[in-house]
Image 1 (tube, rainbow, N blue to C red):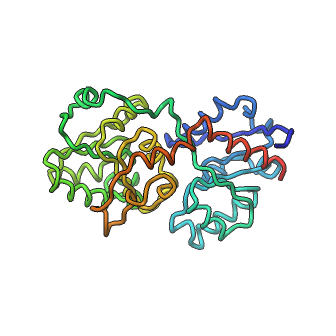
Image 2 (cartoon, rainbow, N blue to C red):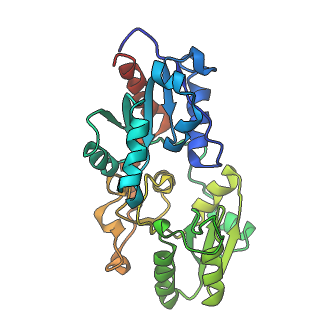
Image 3 (tube, one colour):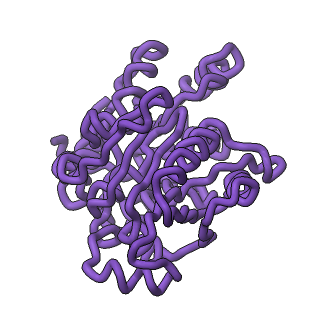
Length: 312
């Protein structure tokens, strides 16, 4: 490691997105590497790529800049999307990605250094609870209900009714309708914001559901603990972080092959829409694979990244 200690400034995102929590957790636990003000920093970490335009170009041009790319959507690789990428790229010294899929895509469009490091899972927030039946009862569920969970937004913000297709809510609905034929007491548990699309579809198809819009982390951890199955049905993802959170809690989870799924889940837990009915959760494999991303161990990979960047 370079003895020249990095001083890292992370601009706020302020969109109630998971990266706001990652920013806060890193800053709280790395006071010796934190730059309170941008002019005191030697590294700027653009933790959400679109916020770069809020940063004065003088600082971007005179600091080491690392930019996190969470994932690419199809529009990001079109002419307009690439034009935006290369406009920002003029100020970026290195990139950080959170999945190997994004690493491969980014490698095709830049020669700059790319650091691969998924975000961590914080066991102070996400952990297994023993009183599952008691918690179920507190949320109004019965012991023998089969509870399927989804805690990510599914609706476009522009009209609060159109499906956010990248998240695959139409696929989620297809799987739930299939499960409804098998499970007599199927219940769907939704959390988070912008769930209007699925709620409307559930009411249309008489699917029993409960919606908890903005649970605290404590409540959300309880919700993970009472699930019989969590489904990631996305078409494209950077993480998603639910993969790590379910894995560390040993919540049964199946997922499409997006983001970090292939690095956490067993092959039998990854599905496409031609074989979703064969997907089987394997909580032990997921738990063993996620352990390396525990905050206490994994945060060092981020700090090594900043020390290394300081030498570029």
